Image (tube, rainbow, N blue to C red; front, side):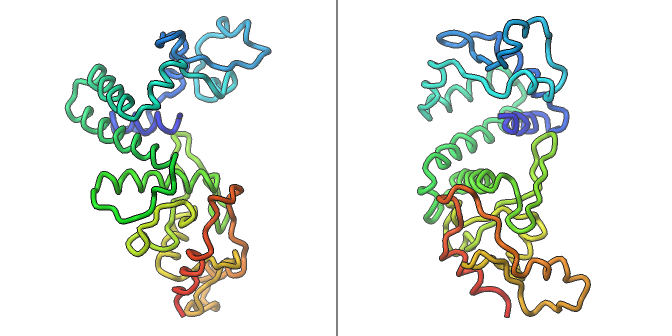
Length: 263
């Protein structure tokens, strides 16, 4: 949710780093929903009785010291399970709080993609097949990215590197095993989380994860060249796999990658 806040803030203002998510997340508890409080934080039991005397948190870190999860108004949550109602609610909120046509356009475009992407995330088996509309492709690509990065816990499948900035940008990218142009497959089983440099190397067939769950390096790369060391050191290393087996790369996709390694 915090990451989503930064996305929306950036869409509205163009300045991602200036966002302060602790402010709306804190004040939501004072607003009213359909059947009660709009947002009920789950405070630590030791501070429940004194939380009002602690005052407004001054940062996201301070907010997290108070609570890390909350419950949305039950009736409102159920209403938003209907995609059409969720779309209407988003459009009304944008129209009410933003007067700039440019801001409205940017926010509506982002929210439309986010909502449609969310439906794909709930049913990842739909993420396969040719795409004819650009809007559908954007939603599917967003779902692919989210599912892959979450499956790998935002950690590179080769180096185990993981870094998330304070405004929720991620070091790793979602990389297709069998390219989308050939497979039309956006399911997480056709993806890996990789740092940008290794994503580039895999897309250029210099490295490949194999069905043996090991990394393979193209024999065309001279192992005596110091500049190639960052790739050669991967050879034989174990591919970092998601804990959830249903998100692990399929053998067919891994075999395709290994078959296309430069020889």
